[in-house]
Image (cartoon, rainbow, N blue to C red; front, side):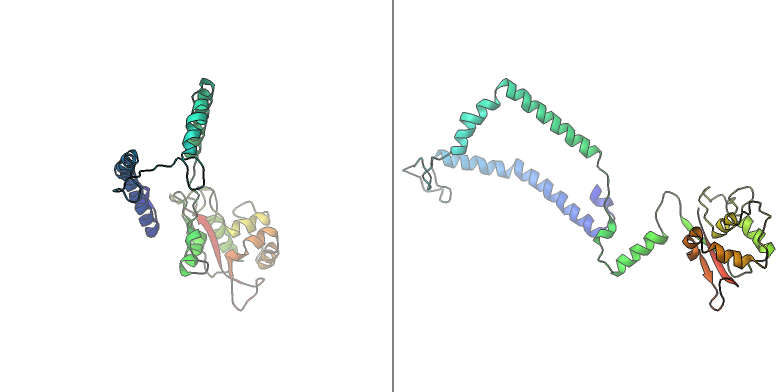
Length: 256
C-alpha cells in the first residue's frame, strides 16, 4: 500500500520491487529451501559427497583439514549451551528478556514518525531543486491555509483618505476590515506592513492618520527600526524616487 501512495514514481517502483522480493523470499523459504535442506540431510545420512552426490565417502575422518574435531559448534550447543538454557532459572530470564525486547520493539514501532525530507533527493543547483525551493517559500502546504499576497498598487499613501482606506482594508476586526470580513479569511493570520507602521506611530483609532507632509519621513524612520527592517521587502519602491518622497506600491501578506 505504501508503494502506491508514495509521491515519487521511481521510489514507488523501487519499493514495489522490494515488496515483491520479500514475498518471493518467503515462498522460497517455505518451499524450495526446506526441500534443499531435506535433500542435503539425506545426502549426509548416506555418506555422499556434497559436490559429487553420486560418490560415497568410504573413509570418514573425524577431524578437519586443520586437525580439529569436526562439529565443534554442534558439541558446544549440545554439551554446554543447551543444558544451561534448559534450566528453569535461565528459562525465566530468557523469557523475560524476550518479552522486554519485544515490548521495546513494539513501542519504538508505534512511535515512529515520518521525517523524510523530499529535497534530500535533489541535486543542489538543479532545476527541480530550484523549483522546490520556490515552492517551499511561496506555496507552503498547510492545513487549509494558503498564503495570499495583496498588492495595493501605485497610489499616494500620504493622502489622508487613502490612509483611512488602508486602515479599513487591513483592519483585523471582521466587523470593519475589508479582508478580515471575507468568509474565506482565517482569523488572526493577517500580516500587513501598514498595520505595523500605524502601531509604531501609536495610531490606534482607524480614523487617525499621519500628517501628509511628514508621512514619508515617519515611514523612513519606521523602516530603520528592527520591525521595519524585517518587513522592508514587503515594499516596492519607485525606480527614480527615494523612500522619503514616494512609494510605488506595497505588498501586504495574509492567509486565507
